[in-house]
Amino acid sequence: MPSSRALALACLLALGSSARSAETPPATIAVTGLPRPGNLGQKDLTALGATTTAWTVHGTKRMVTGVRLDKVLTHLGFSPGPMGKDVPVAEKRAVFSVAECVEGMGRTDVLVVWTVDGKPLGPDEGPFRLAVLTDGEPSRSLRQLKKLEVVDVVAR
Image (cartoon, rainbow, N blue to C red; front, side):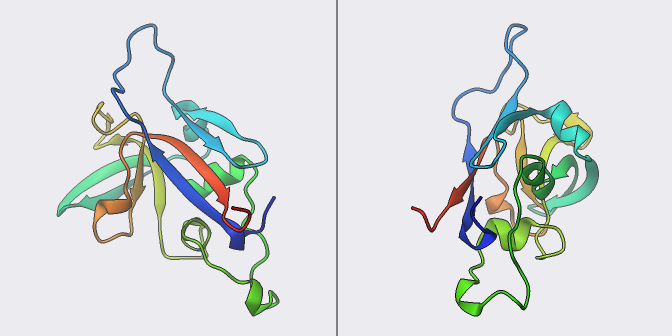
C-alpha cells in the first residue's frame, strides 16, 4: 500500500439512467485501488456508521444521511500512512483525499449520502452522492456516484 503522500481519490460519476426495475440489482459503489477493493451498497454503508446532518446547498438547508468517506476507505484497507513531525519534509505531500478526508487531519467533512431530507436520492442525484459538507458551494459534491478510486499518483 503506498503511503498517504502518494494517494489521490478519484470520484467517478455514473452516466446514464439510475432508475431501477424490479430485476435490477441494488445500487452499489465500486471502490478500487485499495487492499480490499469491493462494491458497497446502502446496507454496507449504513453498517459503517451512518449519520444524519445538515448541509447547506445554494442557500438551502438540507438534511442528508450518509457515512464519512474516510470510514468507507478504511473499511477497505486504506491507511493514511506516516504523518507528523517525524516524517521528513521532502516526503510530505498533501493530496485532497488524505489531507482533507481523514477525520482529525483536515477541516473537510465528506459523506457518501443516500438520503436527503429523509427521502432516497432520486435518479437525477443518486443512487449515491458525495456531499462535501464544509465547502462553501457544492462543486465537489458529486451526483450519481458510482465509483471511488484510490490512485498512487507517484507511480503514474
